[in-house]
Length: 303
Figure: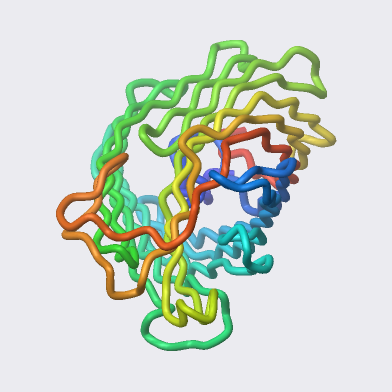
């Protein structure tokens, strides 16, 4: 299977690691929450989220491969305590390459243009341009380190995320740690041939253009920010197909709505630099998250 390469899976996803000994060609997940209460209100809302992540790597030669794919996300929730349930999401195209630089070093560069919107109209406000550049150092077959930078033209302003991570798999292949901070981390252990138990962390900052979210706010955007910690069981139906069932908790979750013209200078992980935008809605509470993810995986190990 050495004609395939290791790639980045975003998420921005959300999805993240390109350094493991496999590639997830298709990932389909659905999540929901119990009712979340708005601040200073008795009104409650759920968050329903669907994500489809498709990756298609194309080998050009032994040291160079083209990376293609698409990510589709759909979110459903209330943004105002006196408003209706709103649907919004994004469609991201993945286009880039992986190049082997030396025996130990490789580079992955992926452009991530997307539409992030409620899909009620299509203007330049609905389009964002992003990308990621990562460098991997292969220490051993089961251990490597990586560093890089993620950028996206979020609606509040440019977002820059420096990244640092590592991948490790134990010699018996039962324990695995796949870390890319501050975006994601995953640690799991195979307790039975058909089952793994694990812990997963996801950090997200994303923005979506909204049309007529309320009568008083015809042109806005929502900034989604959350940190999510999950415990999960992974059921391995075959070597390629698995199902993850997760229960998690959100930390610092917010879906803040701003006027479209209310911007900052730029964003970094956990902070925005410059002018402070005026939030138009109220936050709702953190809470539990239930998620199921079906994965079709291709092993990259040499036979």
